[in-house]
Length: 278
Image (cartoon, rainbow, N blue to C red; front, side, top):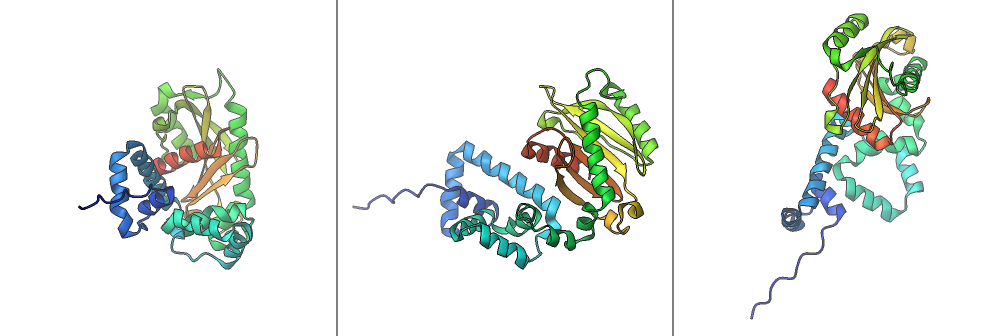
């Protein structure tokens, strides 16, 4: 009499990540896909990972083909036991190089290598760039607590607000749509900056938590960097100032999403704004 085939072992998170990264062993693929078809919660988790992976590729795609530098690998060897390294590489698969280079360098203290990699990395350390990010944090801390005067022009006049700030910054502006994360536009205001006018758009959720988008021109000479650096997109986290922010540079313009929020929530908002504005 034929015995039924034994059930497949439980699907692990490592296998799910390997599936997302295209690294799953062929002999496990059908079993994992069958498990996803039976488990809507697991399928939703994998779909969310796909979205995160795509966002990371868009933000750090230029790093994915770079070899991981020897100093960073040495730091990983020092900080992580062999089994943890093996698990991490299996978990991240093809994204390991990009994610580790983009983020691990910071928490392992490998700032010197990161600063030397590209003009945009050098720009992040320039005094004018640090000042821009600090100004964004200060502007958020000053205006976000305001009840009646948080903005100069309310969201009800969004078209006028965008036209006015676009004219003052001499660049077509756009308000990103953050509603999928529960944040709607409160309004905006004009602010002064070292190299001219700056703009601030403010958003809040149903609980009244606020986040701001700070925008302004960056001058290459004032930033202590080359014009080429200001053409490259940089996406970085900053904790200087009263509140943290994620910021980036695109075609000579700086953007900073600031708020007194957990880092992962702020990252989601900044990523959404980055994608919408790019």
